[in-house]
Length: 240
Ligand SMILES: C[S@@+](CC[C@H](N)C(=O)[O-])C[C@H]1O[C@@H](n2cnc3c(N)ncnc32)[C@H](O)[C@@H]1O
Image (tube, rainbow, N blue to C red; front, side):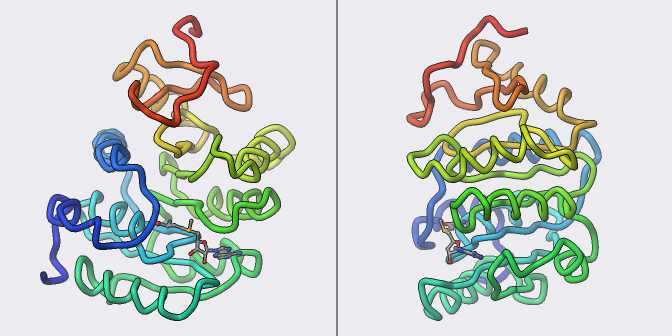
């Protein structure tokens, strides 16, 4: 396969890329893409914690306009993971459009990442070290790198890896510099956007599943999949 894969091509082969993405989220990502495109949002793609690139490639290919990509990982699982990422980027995307940054995310600033991108990020996935301090750091970087109406996608919120839930909660409740807030949750990922678009994006997803609503860190959030195995109690149909 050439470096000109479509999203559909990629989905047919995504099982060949090691990593962690709930299968249902691939469809959700297209719903996110339709929504942000309708709001005129364009930009680059970034991820902290790329592993072999499974979700990174999905974000890049769902975008359709061949965005520039920055991929951050400390490759704590060995150089073969980076080699695998490079192979998948060459197979499904375009090495010239992907900058791999081998670093601990704690050592990176938003300025470092912005310097590697031609534009602010439309999508920024936070999936690095799952300890609360790292999650808070990575969210601070993400909120400075995304564009207005860009989407920050946080993996493992509400999963048994409680550091992510703790990190997100502390970020939302104790952060005077907060620029992003959640609007939807499901399939092991929390979706956040800049404050100005939050309500519009929440309303968009709420229309898809009107009965799935809950509050996360004080913000109304829409559920994205009623059959989601990650779905937890506390989601109601009564919030307005
Ligand atoms: C759960 S995996 C990411 C999965 C990936 N997003 C996917 O699509 O399958 C977590 C990744 O975060 C990386 N990581 C862990 N701690 C990190 C840190 N402090 N800075 C950068 N990357 C880190 C690991 O090397 C690993 O590749």
